[in-house]
Length: 134
Image 1 (tube, rainbow, N blue to C red):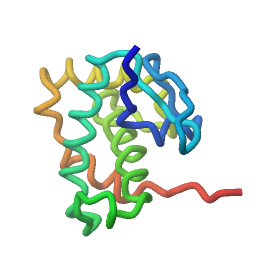
Image 2: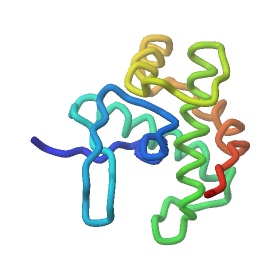
Image 3: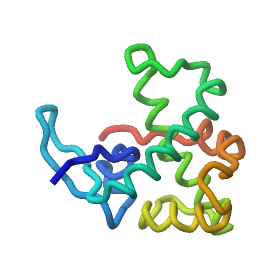
Image 4: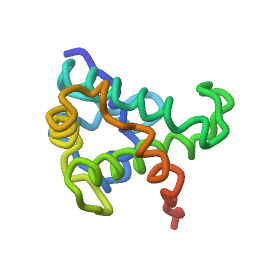
């Protein structure tokens, strides 16, 4: 089976979010999350890239893994999904129970992931508060 690194892996590793297509795997660097579906992986990756493109100017960061702080990616993933849930379901929550189902609902509401209004998610991403390690 091919392993596709989950586009929203940071949200799943924390245990705050869930996804029916997620599978925990162990890589050299430690635990990680893989997607069990090529189609689901492609959709989530596309959505994440759109969220990232909308958010990076607000964070004053470039799309460069060597210079972009990891915290920016975490805020884009967490805040972006929470904002998407707010837009799609009309409700705010502290977590997302099933990322795959949320992406499906967003695809249905906006008829295509290309038309998801990612700029409307930027305030959710920039205001997301990182949890402190205990």
